[in-house]
Length: 374
Image 1: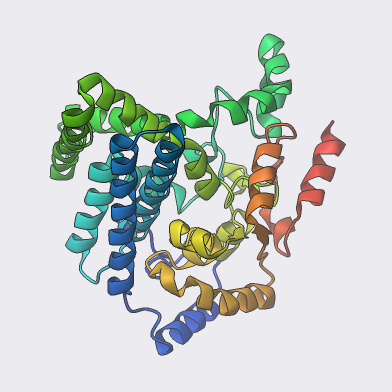
Image 2: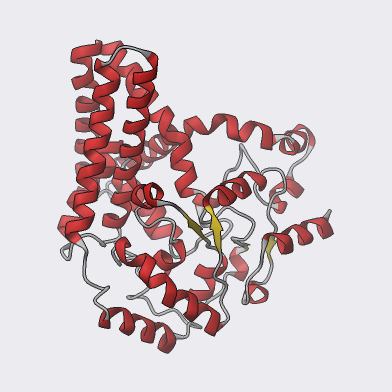
C-alpha cells in the first residue's frame, strides 16, 4: 500500500530529472533494502523498551524508576519509528515481511491500529501533505487552530480561546499517544462493521491489538496486579506523548512548511512535497530513535527507500532541489520543535499559490503575510 514517488507519475513533474536522481541512487546501491541494519535497530529498541519497563517494575526508588521509564520510552519510540520504514516497504524486499514487521511494531508493540496508520499516513498524508481538508495530520480542529483561515472563521468565545491556545497546547501533549490509539480504534471499528470496506487485514489488526493488551497489561499484572498494570500501561503511553510529538511534528508544522489550499494543490509532485516539508538535524541518539524521520524531504520523495541511506541521499537531493528551483530547508531539532509550538500563537497562512513558493519560503515570509492579514 505504498504511495511511492518511484511508482507514481504525476502531471507537471519533471520526471527526467527525478528519474536521473533515482538512477544515480541505484548506481550507488541505495535502492537495496538495508534489512540487517534495520532489523538490528528494531531488536535494540525492543530490548530497550522491555528492559526499561523491567527496571521500572522491579526497582525501588523514584530515581531508578524514572530512569527505567525514560529508557522504556526511548525504546518504544524507536520501535514506532522503525515501523514507519517497514510500513513503506523499506525493510524487506518482500511485502509480506514488511507487513509482518509493521504489525509487530505498530499493533502489537505500540497498540496503534496498523490499517489506520496505512490509511491516514500512506494513502492520505503522503500524496497530499499539509493540504487543508485532505491531510488530517495537519488538522488540529476543533480543539486548536493552526491556520489563519481557522482563526478568521472562529467567533465569540472560540475566537477568544484561540488567542490563548498556545498556553494550553504544550500542557496536554501527554495525551498524544492516546489520541492516536483512539483514532485507530474508531477507524478499525468502522471498517469491521462495513461489509463492503472490510478486509482480512482489519481482522488481523483486531487480533493483534487484543494480543497487545493481553501481553502489555497481562504480563506486568503478575508483578503489579491488574490495576497496577493498567496504571503502568497508561503511564507508559503518557510518557511517550511528548517525544512522539517531537519526532513527528517538526517535518510539517513549522512556519517554513507551507499549508496549501486544496484548490491550489500543485500538480508537480516534487513541488508539493518540498514546499510542505522540512528536515531537522539530530545527534547520534536522535538519529537512532528517529529512524530517518529527520530526513523528511528525502523520505517524501523516495518513501520506499531504507532510511539508513537518507543521510547520503540528502547531499544529492539538496543539489537536485537547488538546481530545479525547489525549496530544501533544514532546521535544528530544538528550533523545529519551538517553531511548531509557535504556530499556535501565530497560525500559518494557507498559501493561495504554491508557485510563489518555488524557490522557498522562510518563517519570516510567512509571518510577514500574517502581519499583512492582521
